[in-house]
Image (tube, rainbow, N blue to C red; front, top):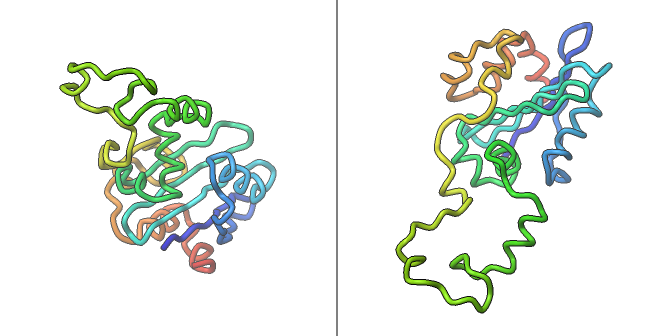
Length: 178
C-alpha cells in the first residue's frame, strides 16, 4: 500500500495535500502533479512511501529538473511507483530503447542470429529490479537547505515521512492528510 502527499511551500509555511497516483505513469506525470500544487513556482515536495519498505522524495522548483531521492533503490525498483523514480536515477531506458529491445532474443542476440559460445559464458547484464543496488539513491542533499542534513536523511527508518515533515516544520499539515 502506498501513501503519497504533496507539500507545497508558501509564504505562510507549508500546505499539504494527499494525492492519488492512479494516473501517474512517468516522472513527468509526477512533476505535473507537483506543478499543479505549486504556489508561485515555489518548492513542492512529493512524498511517496510504501509500507515502511522504502520512501521517495521528488523536489520540484519552477522549471528546474526535479531532484529525486529514494531510501532503498532495490526495494523501490520492485514497485510500480518506485520503478519510475529508480529508472530516472539509474538512467533507465526510454520508450524508444524499449522498442529496440523488442527485436532482441532473450539472450541478447538479434532474432535469427546464432548465439556464440562466448555469450553463454558472459554474465548477463540486465536492468531488472534484481540488478539495482540496495540502499539510498539520488540527491542526498535534497532537503539539506530545508532543515534536514544528509546524515539525518540517511538514518531514517520507520515513519520517515513524519520525521522529514517534522524537520521541515510541516508535521501538523502532513498529519492532516494522513
